[in-house]
Length: 303
View 1 (cartoon, rainbow, N blue to C red):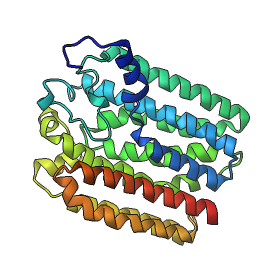
View 2 (cartoon, rainbow, N blue to C red; view 1 turned 180 degrees about the vertical axis):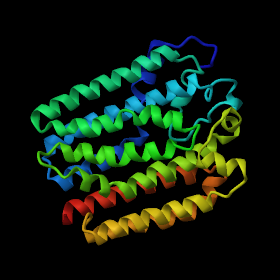
View 3 (cartoon, rainbow, N blue to C red; view 1 turned 90 degrees about the horizontal axis):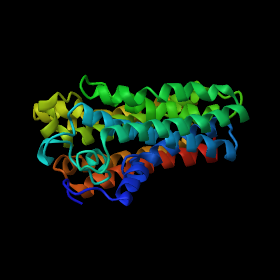
View 4 (cartoon, rainbow, N blue to C red; view 1 turned 30 degrees about the vertical axis):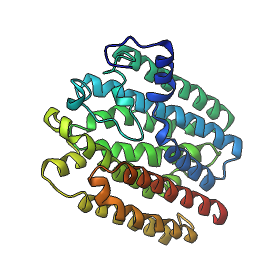
């Protein structure tokens, strides 16, 4: 469908249920919710409900981001002047292509938020009202992430949403849970996804968006011709350091150290990601998820 063609109903449905939610990030959310649930001793039904609530929150956040990026001008203009389609998502171009309108995108975002509130409310009745705390932390992360693109804050709020907020939601699904231990346990994966993956994502968008005011680590590297090897190496070392501290203080069980093995191949792929290699970007994203999966499985088996 071209940008001048009227969208079909099927195109709108695909946008609402697939394009705007950008489900590619679901493994990161599900892994951290599950990690929090395992640490707290939540039952399988409780973790399932927490995962549904978290998935709907992620759909709200991604849809809100599409709304805000259009409203702020990042996704407006001809294709060469707006955010680039990524190999893992093209939801940012749905408004520009006329598939959905700005107002429709906002309604969809609020709809996902409302459904997440319903599931969270049911979970609160079944377990503990503490589930509203991580939900309340996660909700403002969406607009703060979108606004943070203009003041070096997007990576932080993405880390909070995909890390501590998700893990706390999983932990809070069990009565008497230690929310702070779950939040701490999620930091390595939160940093890896929220800072590491986001630097690459924003670097890809920097060409058309830096003139529009984009301000974040990826944009900074693009603007001043700084190789991604420097910030991403620092981020990978920070992930390893944070996990080491969590192991030292018994927040994570010692066998989870084996998850760190996935960081080395990610580091090897940095030069290829910087050149825009789709294969390298998708492989690195898969390795990020494998890191989180290894962490969760080993914590579940030995925790």
